[in-house]
Length: 317
Ligand SMILES: Cc1cc2nc3c(=O)[nH]c(=O)nc-3n(C[C@H](O)[C@H](O)[C@H](O)COP(=O)(O)O)c2cc1C
Image 1 (cartoon, rainbow, N blue to C red):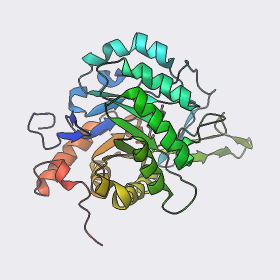
Image 2: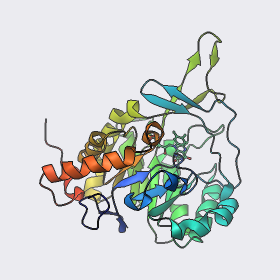
Image 3: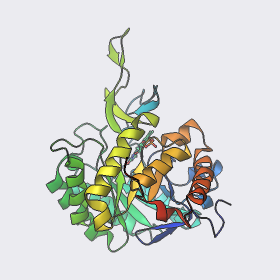
Image 4: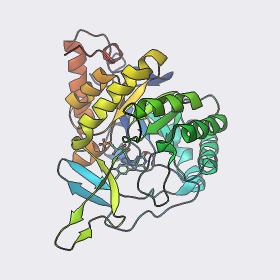
């Protein structure tokens, strides 16, 4: 049943029609549509590109991806072809990708982001842009994700460069400050002009080889992803949805540790309108299809006509 016109997973996100709420996460599915070799992308809602910066980047030295207990630790360092390379090699193929394409932009200054987003604006078929304001892996890294004022300014500048098409802001999982820090940050992103929030990027983390007495990543620290972070992200979605997004009508893409349909359903109940999968793809390339099959039965069992009816429908304990 998945992927048929009448699938109960068909949904919309900030006016974009999606075949399903499943989104392939930035940096985990190649630069554009390389996963077409292993997945039927027509059944996926959207694929997010690798984060693109103004200049090409080789990324960090190895090791830059490591297995952890129930998780994965990475410090890729934004390896990507740069915006000119992207426009030359990848953008002409966007129209042939059988699902929505979301361009991920990253950088180290507002000018960097505006440069990349202005480039994406030339790609007519790109459905939305996602701002990666929270990559924790690059030295001298981005602090936009830690400061509501800087976030508002950054998003405002990108909104101008991008025009009226949907603008997504991907938040970091750790916000220093008040317990409601993530809600303040989400609100700042929307005040700046975000239509959708992605929650969230990897959790800053570190691993040590105790025999060598060395950090295991060449970059020393990295970002944790995979099942271990799922409960952390569930709480963030719950906080942002209850604290602000539900009332403001701002959709959330829940992202972090989804490997089973139950993980995706939990995000939907917490308030997510779409669900990203990253590390789950590395664990098993069939993860998105398995998750979609499980979600379809779940929606039916709960008497809903479509998955959208179950967003935020958490009962009190
Ligand atoms: C190898 C790898 C590369 C990633 N690259 C990016 C990236 O370029 N841009 C970005 O916004 N997030 C990047 N991420 C973060 C993922 O998009 C996602 O937010 C995170 O992994 C949590 O989801 P997951 O547990 O389903 O993987 C990367 C994650 C991994 C594991």
